Length: 537
Image (cartoon, rainbow, N blue to C red; front, top):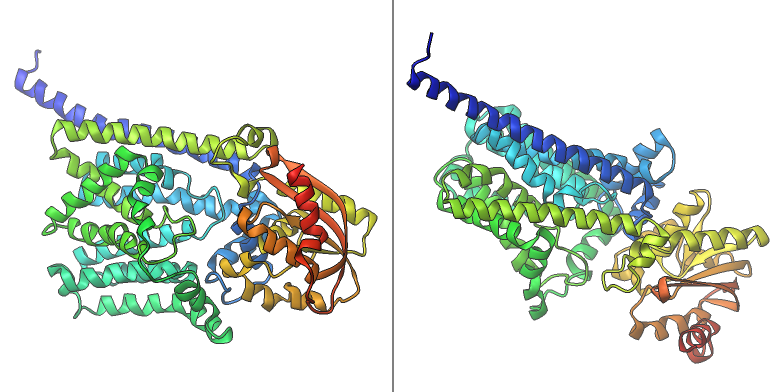
């Protein structure tokens, strides 16, 4: 019996529609599996980033907070190493798992307002985005922070649609996790406030008990911040709000859009901005009102803040939650767009995938000495991942000769890296480098007694001093290296480690602990003269 043409066409159309989610699911799962494997390999082999090593050191002393961050990052590392022992993978495992959740969260949002195909498409877009696809390779607070912000947005969207207390509770849980992770949790709070004031659906929520339930739960995340800052006389707040920010207009910060375009890859970045703009045009509909305001606040708000705030540290990842929300609605928006925009978006995210692969390749090269050597001649040399193993090997060899020596590094980052390599049982002190204050770690080192004041208790003891000669810019080196003789005494050069064509240089000295800093002649300090002799040669 022959099927009527109209019925055959109808069934063919239904079969094609059913095949689309299946095809996109396969695409996403393939991309997801490959990126997870690559992230796992890199996480097992790449030396710790300098900040990672310090977060690990913080995990050895669990507390309500630290001078640079609230406690969650350190708590996650401590919990993982308690279960799996000390090592690169153990330190990074919680962050790998949390980072892997981000595409699934995006899929859940897209599926709620589209269909299965939209969900898998959105998940794929996030999985290939360089900032998101590499999330979790490093044990950094940005991983749980991004997860928490997207979780809070999921809760808000569901609560606006259904007004169920459980959805409001998820909003509160997400915000609480964000506060326990980073002071940048202030941005989603500000974005939410703008939404509640500016959007009609937002203004309707003020009288709903669920909103206040969410705020009550979110406040629990502030408890560690409050307790720590009360005990430390506001050290954490002072660093985040005052010490790291000039709070004056900086014209060079106008380059931020270029930084964002490079971090996301240009076409994908333009596509996500288009999605946020289209969401704003459709702000009378759900979920576009939330995405336009909350996502837009992360992109526009951080740009405006960046014109007056910290422009020294890497910050291209700050707007990531806004880009994730743009990806969540992008598949639905593209269905109503012209063919040219769909092709532009496709090309953009194909290039984003290539950018992600290039980023993985860069990290993979940085994970090995031979690979890092091949990057020695490029500007984007991975200095923060290299040299630590070789420096730690030399320290082990010297300690075998002088087991009574106290290990002292010339800055907090080197101290944390050496302790990570040598093990938690090995105490490593640090001199009061300008880097310690610049990165907000000086108060924490003082709390632990690992700074110069804590070292002075051991006056007269032998020291193995390790100096990272490339940690400071060249114009800053003379002042710092010349001052080291005022901090320790009887300094005798013992060895050097020069790596990657001089991109990484470590000098090792036998010395003695001073009781207190004393004036000295910087030009005559052996640390400076040894550096000059080697550098000039």
